[in-house]
Structures are given as C-alpha cells and as structure tokens.
Amino acid sequence: MQLTVGDIVEGKITAVKDYGVFVDLGEGKFGMVHISEIAKSYVSDIREFAREGDAVKVKILNMSDDGKVSLSIKQATEPGTNEARQEKRERKPLAQRSAPPAPDGSYVWTAKKSESASFEDMMSKFKATSDEKFSDLKRKNPDAKRNRRTGGR
Image 1: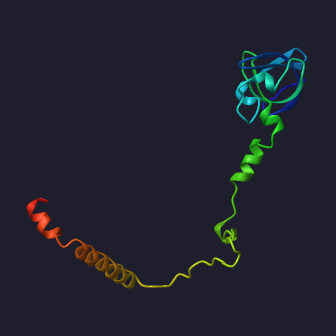
Image 2: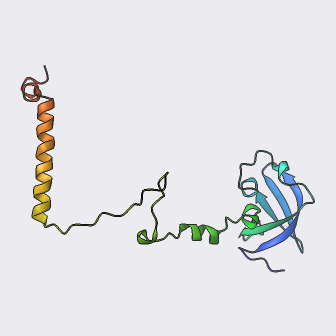
Image 3: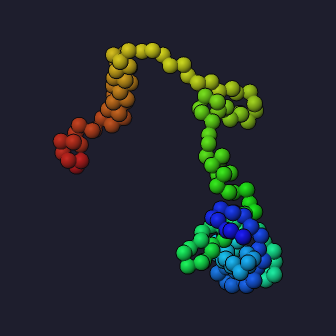
C-alpha cells in the first residue's frame, strides 16, 4: 500500500503515550498522532479518547525522509478539513448580503443613496460643520485663551 500525504486510511492503535498515540497502518508501516491532533476539543487525558487496540481513521499529515509519519484523527473525522475551511472563507459580495433582521422584524435596512456633490460643495459642508464644532468648544471653555497665555496657571 502506497501512502501519500493527505490520504485518509484506517489503522489500529498499538500504543498510547501521554504525548500521542502510535498507529499501525499495515504492511509494517507505523505513524504517530500527536495529542493536539486527537480531537478538536482540549485533550487533558489522552486515554479518554483512545485505547490500545482501537481501530481509527487517520489523515496523513506528513512523511519525513527517515520514515516518520505524522497523522491526525481530528482532521480525518471532523468536517474541518481544508476544503471545508476554504468554503467558509469564501464570502458573498456586499451586494448579495442581507442586513440582519431587526428584533421586531419591522425595520428594513437600505443603503444611503450617494448624492453627486461637487468637491467644492463637500468642502464647504465640511468647513461649516467644523466651524460649528469649534465654536461649541470655545463656548464650553471660555478660559482656553487665558490658560494658553499663562501656561495653565
């Protein structure tokens, strides 16, 4: 049997250690599943998830030149494979997304229509709002000029 990275194969657990499990893949080939690749949830005691003699499906993660084979149980059994992750990443364009529903269901969101204003119109509107905000600040803090001259004393 030829093993290649990415294959999902069946094997039998031959040894359980604190750091992972060793799996017999058949035909004299063995691999190890690190504790981080046992389950999606946190694994504090590996013996809760695997016992010697259990048959398991594993995904081949890596094969080194010296014959070591890295395996994963969680990637072979859970839908969180690379293909599923890629599908999650693909998002709809903004135009196809719908707005979240309001709690009472009565509000329907619509995008603002962009007005075609000239640059000068936009600048004059900005200047007017800026002047209003600045005059409000002056009104709220009439001592600002005096404090500036005296250094805040």
